Length: 623
Image (cartoon, rainbow, N blue to C red; front, side, top):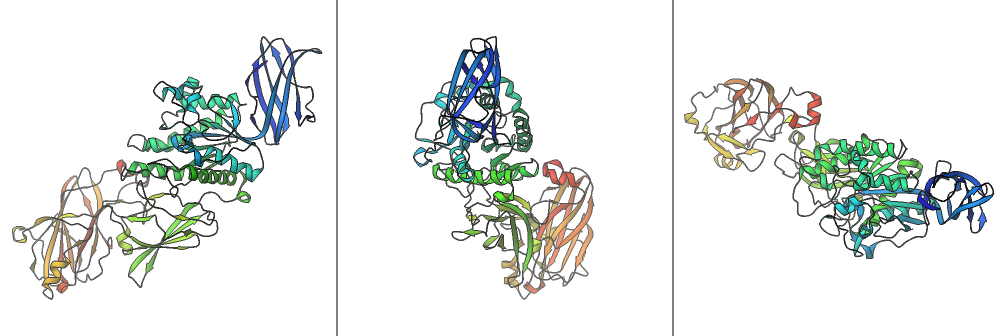
């Protein structure tokens, strides 16, 4: 007898819900008849499994299902083909364990690139199915690519097997299984299925028909070879999809992948725990990197029995790969998340998740606090030094956060802006590709990367306008009551000016003229590709008038400090084509500084707002 599927020396068999084996096996043989099994532990027969019929043999093949071995081990399994009372063929499988078997898959951080010297030592009850299709005690590198039997891994390495590498190769799989063993007491097995640098397109389940010539096909082959059942999946991938083509497709592709695994491994509730991609050095700001992180954070809301584990606080071995020491930490986080996902609150808490934020007025400063609240915090939030990682960022990447205080499961983010000034800004944790983030709970678990989260909700708002035309300082018009629209623009001497801040401040010049009262004009042109309902979003600190295409739309003779962005929404209907917005501001004898100026489109359907700005038109700012 020669085993092809389901029973091998040193294997970990996946238990069923009754905590016994249910191993489907198959192979080639001589003779025909009944396949009978005798299972022993420490030389003693296991009850109910002595000469028990478990399958049949015919036409040179045997197959069956070995059901009933209790969790634990190690066991010795002897299979015999009986033709009547005569044994015509036999096979003995040694050192068999029964427990939980997991897939570790994805790209390089799943494969593992941490230094081997920092990896965990092997444990006899934690095994790995290496890439050479052999079971051995699990010790990194378990992705021994230089011995792979699946052609896809050779093809992805340029058509040749890579050289043996025992310097780097620590990933999360071994640590995950060892922590699962510590917490459950059950034997653990891991199937090494990752490959560095791979994209979701390369993991497409539609390529399953290629078998070992595709990543998904190779994964299915390895599961089937070991009985067809697994306890769950741990996944680390996404870096290779952080580009303008792949990033918008990521959530859909992940839903397809998880659904395919649940179908092909015959478990509609197969748990799936993924890692939210962390840091990358030298890439600079990347909206696509941020997009993948945010999509991964939100996957548990669209995929049931799914959890996302953050790693933004962990150390790197190089420019992108988690260090060997911190891969051990990651494995523990993944195990804790898996147990919370599969066993419920009695097993612990799921990874920390953003719950909500609220705005709090800080009267003493005349500014604003953002109270950011989190779910699933163990104990309270803490940081080894000054809490870092939160950002409130405007359209022009201007940072607003100057301090963070931690209170239980909340972070008080102190912002150098007034509430109205925040309406076009975004809240982030872990903004950029290489942030410094150090906030964890008492269990040492990181906050997730999140953002952009539009403060005040999702709206179709342009960034603050910085490039406008500004007049010379004109003689005082008092509170502007009698001021008419300037049809002759020549006396204004309008000149284009690009401001370095979102607030169009002329304070230095106005302060020099004080206490003289003067008048100035700001002018801006926009162009609409279609009919739009718009609002001029204003903040101001002096008497003000606003005209759109020469028609008076707003007047406040009592405007005073402070200027709050978005305090006033001046609504108008814009036809297709070009429009002029003219703002007159009185200096209030030097007490006025300037204006905030942006545009909001008010007629965008909610479903398009949710999809994002690429799905609707906005006015083009001409200056």
